[in-house]
Length: 171
Image 1 (cartoon, helix red, strand yellow):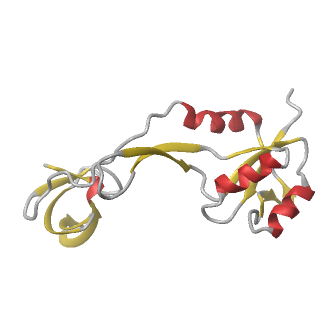
Image 2 (image 1 turned 120 degrees about the horizontal axis):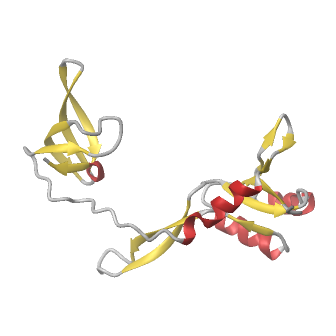
Image 3 (image 1 turned 60 degrees about the vertical axis):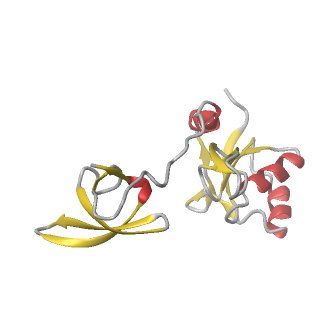
């Protein structure tokens, strides 16, 4: 049987890593599930670096026998903690098996690269590969930055829709 329970702490946006680091500095086992993605080092070079991104945004998982109220209040005063996940007003513990599974998610996943420009041009027919319209064929009318305006035949009529280029492939 495990003596530590896993608590879900809520944090402000984009503060997951800093909050978990501060909790560890205070002597608690805190972490956030991550995935690793490639990011360009700068816009002028082709060099890429691997960067961790939080999978559960605004959440940090804390392993402790009970919630460390002193540490939470200290970090709340510094703007790093906004609260904790609760059920009927009482702190809710995450089952140990789920916490273990979440902790291991980012350990074995290789970073992925999404090619934004897949050589799609105006006037071409493309297939939507993700989302609610997956499998539908559209005709691209305009491309602006990372978004395509396309004509989609749906519910008996043609609609002009804006789609991210990442979900389109040439037909």
